[in-house]
Length: 246
Image 1 (tube, rainbow, N blue to C red):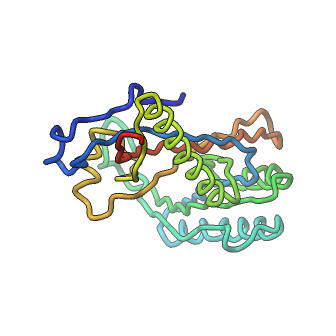
Image 2 (cartoon, one colour):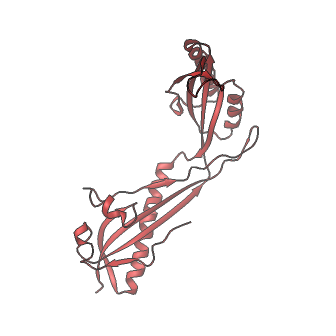
Image 3 (tube, rainbow, N blue to C red):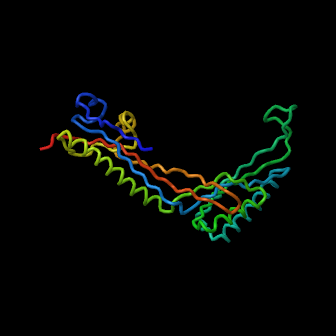
């Protein structure tokens, strides 16, 4: 749901001048923009887990499984730069029962975990890849997320639309009051009154923020996936300096 700041604020020059706000009449307005597009890329997140009585064997187990995953990904024609597997975690596994306090059980082995993040750009091939990964012992999925391949370009477009929306709202209100916009004093993703504390204490007063809705991927059954659309939204707060219209 979009949030509107009505009525818009036109503040007397003496009210906030000492706090870093304009020393002349101004109008404060929020601009909103939203776009929703079908996902054209999915990101698979999962862990590969190896277990063994000693740590070296647990590590060997997880690396053997990881090599099988790299082979599956290669066969699925996923680019190398779309695969992230640069971390490794090792932890002891303890026997837990009533005779031991938490974290002080008998050592029964080691667990080595290697997280993977794989970006699949061919939506027709990823269901088969998911099934193949799940068929590997020790693979634990944490999520499948839809996304957009050209998200940066779309964010730039929606940023322009949010600014245009703010300008349109300001001009519409000022026209009824026989006033006009002179210039832009500040632009921020932060709502008033946070502007004073977050923005005006900084040297730079212009910045934007775009939010992407992280849409989950519902699964109906094996090899059947319905990718939800991705929604991008932006809310920008603008302060315009104003004066009477001639």
